[in-house]
Image 1 (cartoon, one colour):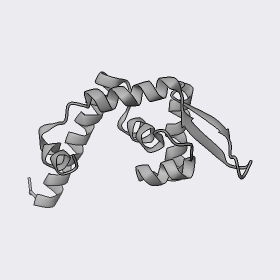
Image 2 (tube, helix red, strand yellow; image 1 turned 135 degrees about the vertical axis):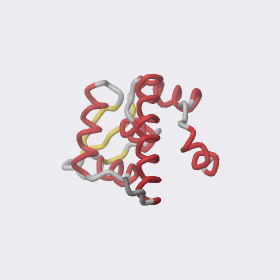
Image 3 (tube, helix red, strand yellow; image 1 turned 120 degrees about the vertical axis):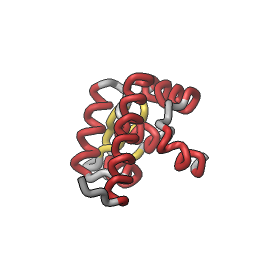
Image 4 (cartoon, helix red, strand yellow; image 1 turned 180 degrees about the vertical axis):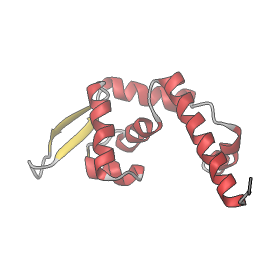
Length: 121
């Protein structure tokens, strides 16, 4: 087996991110993308485009993530204030509570990601 250092490092990164997502689901009942969407909305009222931009997702993928958390009653949609063609999203009380628990308890971070998280705290 030929080893290419950058590819091997990316494999380890992908495996660590998969473990992080598993931990999020087990501990908080949300996937990584769902948690990022909740964080990107926070206490604001935002468009799906802004959620996509803040999460680094393509608009179609962000739309699916938003639909999932909307079905779980973590966010609610409303018509845009300035433009009725635009949908805006805010956290529900349950969404705010879930986000507060995420902030309070954090998540079990896999070892390969610890240095990255220490840089950003």
